[in-house]
Image (cartoon, rainbow, N blue to C red; front, side, top):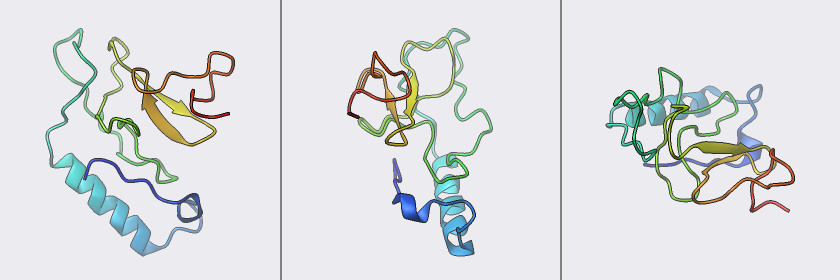
Length: 113
């Protein structure tokens, strides 16, 4: 398991059943149990932030810390050579090497019209 993407219809926070919450918790446990292999390059402090204690999934079941294109994990260290950007239109995170953000609208990735 490297990345989990669920249909938008399933991801509503209010309508989520206990089975969905349990499955997301199990996926988080699996990802937490693995070493965080950050693809972000050199860290200024020499230590990867990992998830920094944050959950792998947002309250709307979008996976964090993972590029949806190359599937590499990237932490939130602001000094990284590579960073993740979240597209508000397609609701996915991409590293800037895979999909640059739209230069005319910073809320959208380069894949979105």
